[in-house]
Image 1 (cartoon, rainbow, N blue to C red):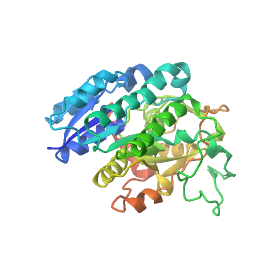
Image 2: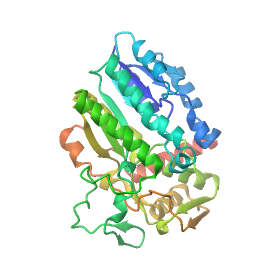
Image 3: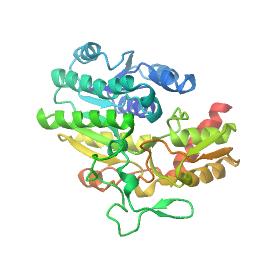
Length: 353
């Protein structure tokens, strides 16, 4: 039986990875210490998800460990009988705002924690593919200098622009404002690439747009669609930050992202980098997301507009999925915005019942 290590195993992408792997016949060691509860409060806790996974799957083991603990991380890798066959690294501090409040903690988790995992992987299982859940925030605010045109409900690029079909990895990460979160993730991203190149290890950075799904523990500072629908369903007030609500995000369902992970695992390569998200088939502006959520839920959202955008926030982001699909033609998306929001709505209603 093959063994995978999944960090952040109680989070959205981590838990989806665990379920997919176990049901495909893998043994999974999860690394999780529920720091989301510290970041965003008890309603964002991953404890329930971790407990549910442990109860469902005999071949899943959860280790309570902070990835900043280099010796602890090394012990986990060394203790896997038969060796590690795959690493999926999703653990992170994911908030711009939180990073600005505690920069040392943010960088320690996102950058140093990733370094600890790479070193353990190199020491104990250098042939195991290392899949890193990176972010489009490595580009900082470079997308904000694109020649966007204001439409009725969204900002949009002219059809003849090179990035109209989506932004690829040719966009520079230099000369931009990243936010401290973007910097710590960029450092981790570059480390993953360098371990691939320098040590010839199979590594990949998936620079994600908005990652989402029905089980996402959405909070005000993280989990855009999940938190939005939670506010619609519960009547909680919601604030849109900047750009008149016309900022555009592409959104990828966690199941589609994990299926991309598994395609890479089948045919890994060294130092691969891809932008991954909803692309042209799954994106929306804030105004469009609110309208769609209200229609699906059958009730209005209590929301206000703030003129101030978050530092490093993108005015427009759509990922170019063509490079990944060219390298891995077996992968395709199953979810669009309508399906994603409907699933999130149904999950919230079931949770409230």
